[in-house]
Length: 97
Image 1 (tube, one colour):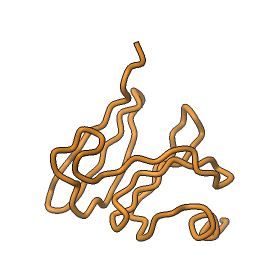
Image 2 (cartoon, rainbow, N blue to C red):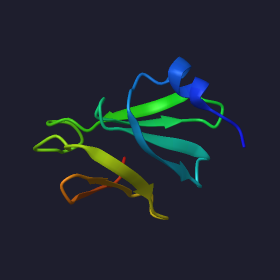
Image 3 (cartoon, rainbow, N blue to C red):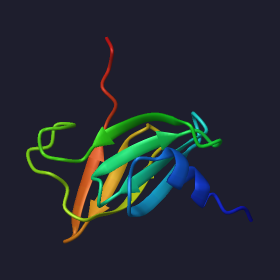
Image 4 (cartoon, rainbow, N blue to C red):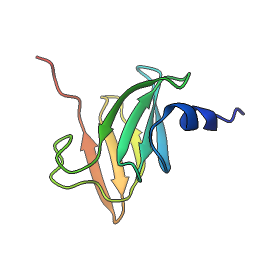
């Protein structure tokens, strides 16, 4: 077991991490922060690759996601976020075609 807390403290600009998932396709980690209202993609060495706001007006959200608590990804690269009270969101990558 390896404690990776330093990655978050040194490299990730979010607080209150609620969940994490591993993207098998890219080998990156997806971190979820409720307090910062962010999804953050990092490499397994802790380098920030990208981030997405979970606030109103971003990522097609009409309202911000309240109290996001869990994140997962399926084989088709859809991201799923669950939040209180019993809300469930799905995000799909936009096609560049």
